[in-house]
Image 1 (tube, rainbow, N blue to C red):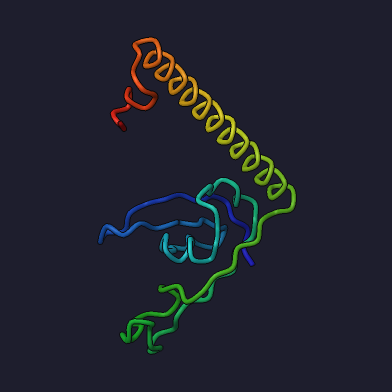
Image 2 (cartoon, one colour):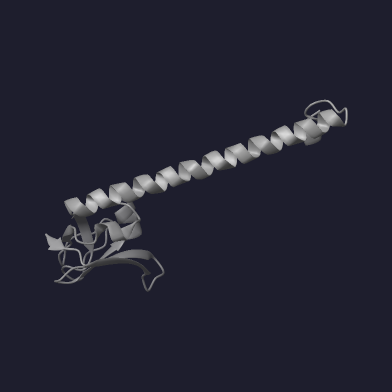
Length: 138
C-alpha cells in the first residue's frame, strides 16, 4: 500500500479521461471508468492521505482486450483505495452537507413552482377562465 499524495483528472494522449494518483513511489494512471466502476467518488480530494494498492499487468500477459502487454507495470489490472479514517469522516460530512444543500435547493424550487402554479390558477379564476386554461390544458 502506498500513501496517496494527490489526485487529479487529465486526458490521455488519446483523449481518454484519466485519474492520476500520485504516491511517493510513482504516479498511477487509472481510467475514469475503472475509478467509477469501483464505486469511488469523483471528489478526488477526499482520497488524499489514504492508501492505494495497484496490480499491473506484466510483460507477455494477455490484456482484457486480447492484446499482450508489451511492458511490465504500465497497464493497471486492478487497484484498491482505502481512505484515511479522519479523511473518510470529513468526506462523509461534506457529502452529507452537499446532499442537504441539494435537498434545500430542491425544496425551494418546488415551493417556487407551487407558488407560480397557485398564482396562475388565481389569475385564471379572476379572468373567469376554467382552472387549467391558463396552462392551455383545457
